[in-house]
Length: 402
Image 1 (cartoon, helix red, strand yellow):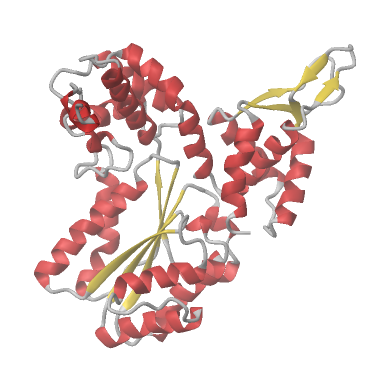
Image 2 (image 1 turned 45 degrees about the vertical axis):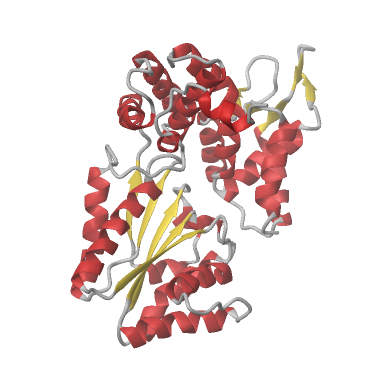
């Protein structure tokens, strides 16, 4: 009897190196991010002359290349440091996986002092150990805090790290914060903001033309020669551009289209397979998008999902019945209740309206102005997906730190 994996390995495939078309792959070349790469390099330049660089923050929507750009520059810096004997080290922390001051500091210390595990020690001990390491070795530490807005006690963390330099006689600590939340800094305590002395950079979403070029570069290495039609690349780029310019969405579409081709024993990936891939990965893309939303925006969306799950209806003054439609005001009230439950500071009505606009832009909700048949002027909001699925995803995000 033929081995299952012998049979599997004997199948034809359109892929040359499937990992390259994975959304987790970070390419060596980053098209359309040369300006950002040069700016970050300049920001970090002083560290090579034994000076502390300013803290800086990178903002931008999911899939706009923030993390890949920072990691690319830090790889270059690490290579330079090794060959030029500079006292610089860097640590990367995904704050989604390490969402508290203690977990962030522990992760940094573990990557800095590898010969000992500090699990179980207090937060203050770990913090002092981190400062001691910089001071005694004259080391300049660069800490990359990705999705920094996911840290629940962010004010304490940022204030401690930024003020830590005042205690150092040699060496330094520099923070590079990365966030999908453009308003993140505004919600920090004024004391924390004043201690940062930061620079800022905003990453714009990719457009369809840029996404097509990004895909072409990956496809040349990921797929076999001439297996992918140009119209397939154009469609994947256009669909991703509609989803707020997310490069990862474009990559996921091409990866899944290739997988469909293999499963159907096809040798060409065309636009019809990308259309099939869109249906296949749509839910995955939505889940990915929701999980990377800023926490306050997640609370607003959770309020919508929670109310939508109750199958709301209302009757217009002309007798017409609307199903699944919510009033903007009732959503805001539900959001305030949730924010109190999760012990989170509440946003103003102005920021609430902005979040609603962004959720509409992502295609997660439908928004219309109240018209004929409804008293007064308000916005009517309807969830674009199954409320129970949205709730399940958000509960995993919101409850894990509660």
